[in-house]
Structures are given as C-alpha cells and as structure tokens.
Length: 143
Image (cartoon, rainbow, N blue to C red; front, side):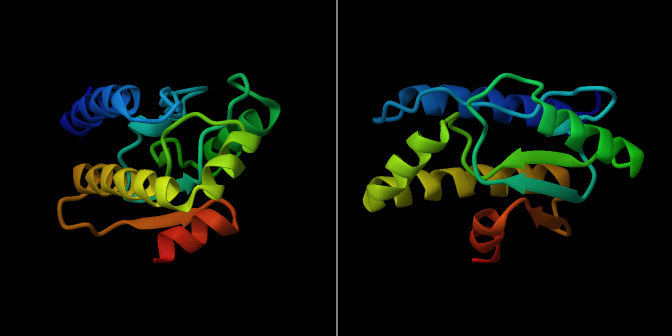
C-alpha cells in the first residue's frame, strides 16, 4: 500500500467517525471498495469520478459491476471513485434531506471539505480532473 492510499484510509476513518457524530440520522458513511482490480476510493490517479451520494443497495449491484468492468476495460483501474456526500442514503432519504435546505447545505459543505481533502491527498497541487456522474453531481462540482 502506497502513502496516498494510507492517507485516504486515514481520511476514510475520520469521515466514518464524523458521520456517526453528526446531528442527523444519516450516520453511516460508504466508500467504493476495490473490486475486480478497480481500486475504487483507494484509486490515486489524478482522474476522479464522483457521484452525488452512495447507494443504499447491496454491493456489488449490476450497475456497479458494469461500471467497474467499464473502468477496467478503459484501463482506469487506479481512478479515484468517490461520492460528494458520503452518508449512505436511499434515494427517498436523499430527497428528504434536500427538502431541509439548511441541513442539506450544512452537510454538503462538510462533505465538500472532505472531497477537497481527498483531492489534496491525490495531488497536492490540486491538478486533477473530476467527472461528475449525473447532472446534480456535475452541477455541484462546477460550483
């Protein structure tokens, strides 16, 4: 395990603890695991693929298997795959959270700080490329 991966694991542990301590009922964090040779969250290339929030379903689901297979076919096994919000929410929980704008903005701000820490671990000069999975992720990352 290289130094960047160790730092990402340390940040992951901090995020898990911070999510558990949050004043919300969304206490469980989730990160893309290594699967079929794709590093997931522990990927350290300067290409980052980010979704909006973790799935509440089981891992690996058919779409995730397709996604990981696609990354492997493109020789992107070391891409950093992450989510903007780390709390594991169902789609209905995410929609409910967004209805409470103040809470959503507070949680989003905290999660963006974590994402920035991930980026800094991957490249201290912040010279990375981020691809948002879906319109909402893309729009948040543009801001």
